Length: 328
Ligand SMILES: Nc1ncnc2c1ncn2[C@@H]1O[C@H](COP(=O)(O)OP(=O)(O)OP(=O)(O)O)[C@@H](O)[C@H]1O
Ligand SMILES: [Mg+2]
Image (cartoon, rainbow, N blue to C red):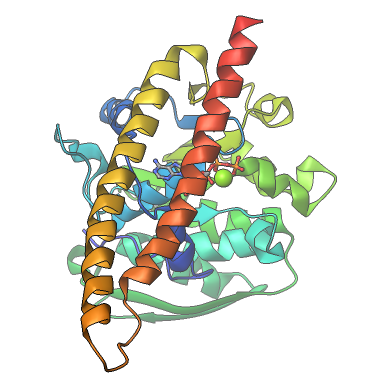
């Protein structure tokens, strides 16, 4: 099965790398997702919620890495459902970039990634693109005999004069429905991070990515992993759809969160110890040497370590605030 390529459409690869810097723990979250995926009768939607900074995007980005095959989950157990290729498309909403909350860009990015992950989808997209006047789809098909599809590459997909909803229906939902109708029976899983940030696109929630997802028809046969801050406005949109929720910041997860933070701090200290040792050796070397030394690359690591400590502090703060709220 082709692995996920998060460079197609909007390129999320730098964002994924940045958000998973020094990623630690969270195996218990991955276990819940593994179990949800392993149950074919489970809900269609999995909603990962949590307070700001609780680690939702980091988890989403890590899941994208598992799907890409660049990282493996997990140390203690084998989780076959979250292995390479398990996601077929990913999208990270961000209020900082207007395209990252745009329903049109969302549809385009998803369509391109799905076409790369699922050759049958690429063929259906190509057909639909040719039939639909408003879609200008330039698609190059490699070996396209449906029984032995080897490679399908969607080089470019541009959409003109379509609303977000129409684009989503035409280039994402309809090709999915078509391949399901033709007997494609493998699971299709899509991850969308930060639904709360998607709301910044338009005052009216009807014009946002959240609305597209909440209306996604069942016969597209898609399972969705969604993340969001714990906002009623978003949950209300999914009220009629059965979904499994994991609230990261709930009191019953306090101990697990604390263990993750402890593990994170232990690992940072281990790193720091190594770093200090190498810096001491370096400073001794410099004292005994008369020639000018190039800058020690460890200084770069020291700088990133300081950033990591800031992150750990954020996580710790959230946990302590949670605890205070509980005690009230
Ligand atoms: N498991 C982890 N290991 C290491 N660092 C982490 C982990 N989880 C989160 N962080 C760091 O903590 C910070 C906050 O995490 P993240 O951005 O994922 O939170 P969030 O729940 O998505 O927040 P928001 O609601 O604001 O989007 C980030 O800088 C992230 O890199
Ligand atoms: Mg986030």
